[in-house]
Length: 71
Image (cartoon, rainbow, N blue to C red):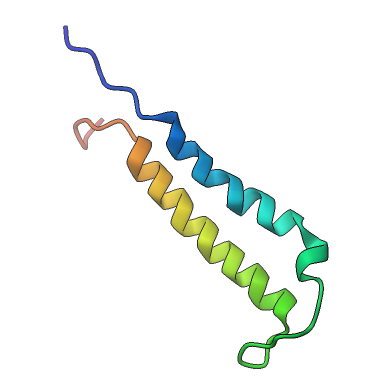
C-alpha cells in the first residue's frame, strides 16, 4: 500500500486575494484613471475576474489528485 502525498494547503492562500479584492469597494470606487476609455471601477472588476481565473487554475492544478485520466 502506497500513501498518496497530500497537497500543501499553502496553495489555498492564493484564493484569498481574488475573494477579498472585489469586496474593498471604497478603494476602487472612482472614475480615474481610465484605461481604453473605461473608468477605473470597470477595468478593476475585469482585472479581478481575470486574476481570479488564473489563480483558481493554478491552485487547481497544484492541488489536484494525480491519477489515471479515465477515473
